[in-house]
Image (tube, rainbow, N blue to C red; front, side, top):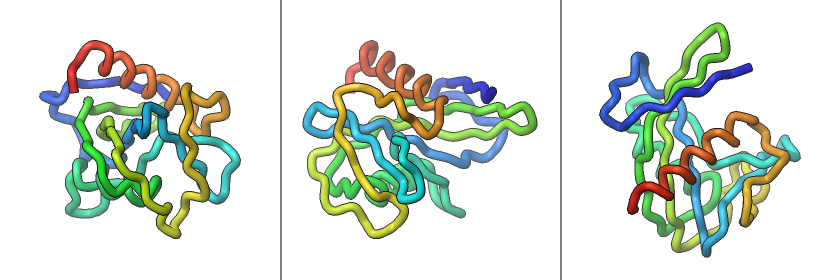
Amino acid sequence: MDKIQFYSLDYIPKAPLIIVIIVSRYKNKWVFVRHKERNTWEIPAGHIENRESSYTAAKRELYEETGAIDFNIYPICYYSVNNGKTITYGQLFYSSIATLGPIPPMEIKEVKLMDYLPTNLTYPLQKIIFKNVLNYLKNNTI
């Protein structure tokens, strides 16, 4: 099973960041997305493109996956995932969305607003990621 570890923002990751994950709220609901090829739910996320900062990637991915056009985005922490063979690094963000537009015609089929974390997640590690963000929000002012 994959193992995830979280690091403060002053940590220097041991490899380039690959993925950004953006836990988001809109109208006091959590935002989840469903990929066109799956029946499960995900936290908005995506790859950091070549020569793109993690912050720029997070803003781009949030728009591409949810249609968010007016939002605030905050870095929460870095993280690593060890799958037993490789360790990859990414950055976790929180976003407060003011305005959702149409979903861009890409890979996301549906955006759903929920009160709680759905049970049918595509990636089980997102349960731990979600709890980490809840804990951060409980202990920090954004």
